[in-house]
Image 1 (tube, one colour):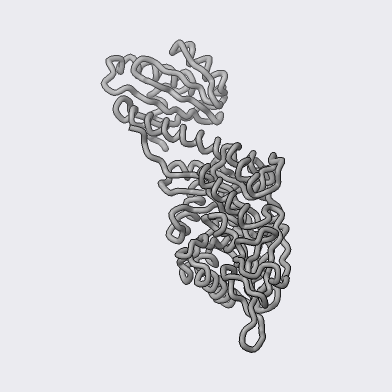
Image 2 (cartoon, helix red, strand yellow):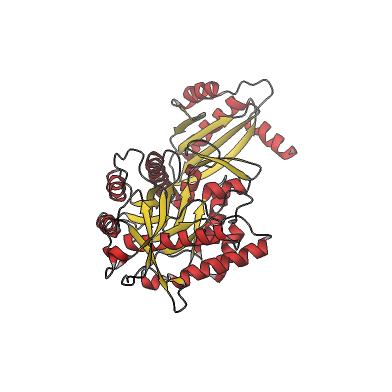
Length: 447
């Protein structure tokens, strides 16, 4: 039976670097041909204009072929223009808010790209403009809020699963900022809910101290806006915490905090990163810096959760493919370890020991190899260790720091050669350490 593993998708944030075309549809096709199964579209290079609706009377915004109409402004009883959304039939006195985007001309192209992505099993998401400042009550905040609405609107048109957004600068203090964020995001998800086929609103973690988005910030908002989700940017988290993600347990701690607020998969952005004084300086290729995907992959292969992992590295698709390769290698090693452990639990007993080495005794790798060959007839050097064996002992792993000899043995259970194996083993250790078994016991008793 083939074991079941969680779904882990890999994708990129933006147009593939190798893509000759620059449209939404080109990006979908090229991401698929690169072997990726996720794509985060960037809502960049957009211009918003307001025009009279005269030429479009009787049409809906989706029927307009020359632009992407994201909102209709209609005069109320007092003659003041108010927003009525982007789905009504256009009337003569309306004013249209048109979005001009370099990746698509109209809703037909957006829908075509979304349908193609679905056919190719390419999960789509869309990132709102990077500069967002939604926590203050000013014109910039309103413009940021509107851009997030337009992103949700376009995301729905393409069938995106997630909308990714930054929040902006802190407003006064932490408490005020959290309350402002709850108000902003509650308003968005209430106006554009998942029940009306809008994407899930994703709030991204921050990499700078002055920007809203620590782990605690995001969780505080999600507790009050449960229909939103976290966007776990590990480069940002690593930067703002001063380089805290170094071991498997560090990644585990972060993921466990966010899992309860995710919607059936954790959306993770990954790249290398340079940081200073708890602030991100710049994103780098994955092989650079001390944030290691190799370590994260060790956590992933033992976890049972679904992930969507987006490369935000400057190398985009190269690093997305590289992460996939690293994960496969980690998965292979994990399977081998489990199979070996299962086999060894039935066949061998593992012991780890360390022995003192007599002062002046040469105990480098080459010496260990030479002595092992002389006594046991075979030995090889692997990663600075000497590996050998003898009937009755399936594996003897030897290494030294110059003062002590470190030995790991895997002894065959119920071996007929056990007595002879012990004699040869003791002879090997005596020769390498310069101490007899009696002398070693005496030294250990003093310790």
